[in-house]
Image (cartoon, one colour):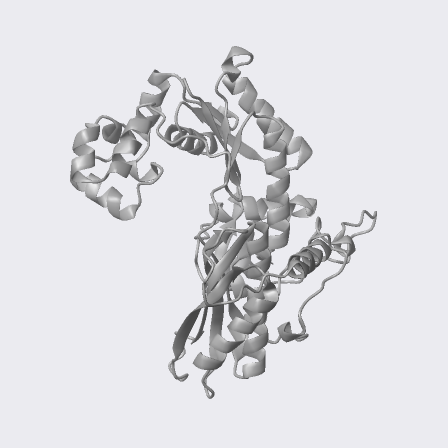
Length: 435
């Protein structure tokens, strides 16, 4: 029998912010979205105060000040590095690991029960991640991924479980499924949940008791697979090799409105450079590039405008220089003066493996071995934090950059931000929240 474990970090973004701030260990804390707009993460203390996910921060200003809620801008460099450390720890504990998201991973525990109890193993995983990284995780164990998801949810919901729930026993499966609303089942969204409720299917157990073939006929093969998984039949194997991305999107809302072409051009080129770096990390080449720009949506005094353009390159490439040149041509075609732009972005798509492409009979290939070496050197310098090399067309100013007024230091990715241990009260405390 297959056995899976889902390991999920608790309140991941908020926990990362508290990791190097022991003075905030029991403080309510929230993390904001791009441009410090909405709440995207909450500590358990902030949840207890009734702070809702996605609420605009200006609407909870009074609560923030009343309860002393700590406010942070999203620090993606910190979160990504802590996630990498957690996943490395998990890979040292299990024979196979599928990284499902930045804070979740499935482990293959098939055969582990022959050597150690599954609950005992789950507690060992929790203790090891806590010791090596400082993050608290919960572990759900079951014969299918969908059941492992529900087991993980129960591990978070019920403190008596000590953060580990083993659902390999069919009797325990039925008991938990009877307590779980059908909306908590992995893959059952709000609309699908409403349709199931209309048929009298309100709990996960009631869904598990349905005839799979009837569910497939009335809904889809995906929901049929979910029903089988709820009954302990593994239909979703572990993906130990991350699937290749189908496209790479890089977009941002501006910290302040962009009205000059030079600023927009620098922003677009910065997005292209970042996307090209991700493309090379995927070991792919792309043949299609898209650029879009738009004004704000909520200010009635600003005229609205949005536009996008795409082009297909003669040959797939991962050379940032080629993509920058193409992006400049696209931006020139859609730019209009007289507007206050709020957001822009680029998309790379139509991917090919390196060296795998259909040549054009009438176009001379522009392959250059120096290009690959140059891009490799560029990535090595930038990824090893030995400095930052960028193209002049990305500009040296950042008038268009996101607002990140409550950004914490990149404790683990920049030498200058390494935590300092001192007997005196740190002078680098967060300033009071202001709007």
